[in-house]
Length: 498
Image (cartoon, rainbow, N blue to C red; front, top):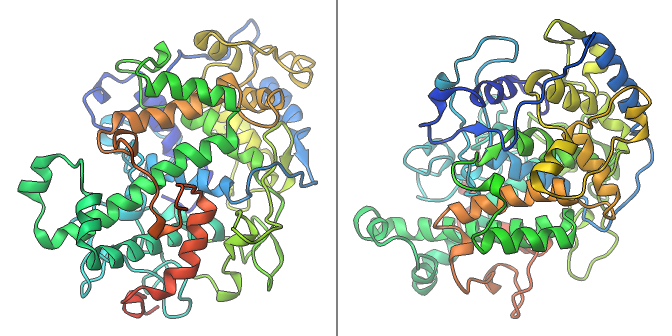
């Protein structure tokens, strides 16, 4: 797989095939539709005309200003981190015939941090210390807070995409550090280990877990539960309209989700993965203040781009992009809307145009992220329109906006619809976008018997940044990690030498 963070890889081809392939039904990880195929139809259909019409409308979204919402700027990248935790296809490129039965979704459709832990110390030993069992490698000789790397500079982590820019790479590093801190605690606190493993199915505890493995398993479970709590109680409230989120939580946690999500409905749908969850593209800023040394830097500037060792001067002070206790002035994300940062209109890693169903999208247009989102929807995967999804969810339907109808487009692509809908809800996801995003993530937690939603009475732990009353946030966790990561007992022996 090439190092393309938002490229049209075989991921989309895989999705397209799996939505109709019977061979995928019995596979443990599969994609599908919540709705139905929505191909472009109509008398005299002209693919090039469709491309030109959408292209012109999407160009109007470009914005050089940096408006700020009430959501921390780092939450955009936490969304990316979540995405990389639940989906990945790592084989061929779009445009070739693919048998979905031969393609594995490397990420499991569960919020379990396999992107951080891999398959654990036994199956992914390259990520773990040989001399200090259970500890994840962290940092390298040239930068104590970079990702661990091999001699070629490649990050030694569970998902290479978490090295694509400085912010997501340091979020990944923070979760590694959190695990190592938790493991230190577990080695010195038998009561914490016993408490952390409460509720784990007895067969796993009694038959499969050796006594020396329990500190690692306890630390991993502590980290997972805090992460899942943050998805449910910090990430989703940040981006989803509160009334919509309340409705989703009551329905899914109460056992009566919308019909579309019931039974054998796809855990990871194209409506979620290709459209609704890409709302994060609308929250990207043109520039980020990463620390007091470098100041503001663009998303694709050399110092911010990843897939290489990071110099110490580009280490991020999370207080600049998250809300730290006792600090102020953190940068915020853009409100969700149809105006997008100019920075995502020139993707430097895209080097060629795209061909869909005989229509050619030139390089200049292929390098624009909004255009890629819509053309993937309309030409590759035929995702339901926003209006169709609103009807399926039985919620208020928005008509296509003027910039589309004036160009003969009457059905709004679902990704674009979610942004338009958010404008009616204070810059947060509305009934369609919010239900798809929150419904999917909450359902993953409900379907996982070991997730935090099944641990009755569970609260974030004071040992890891929560207050005595249970107040907790990603900002609080990162503030704790930044203050404690250099105190890990074996930190110097966890750095890679390169």
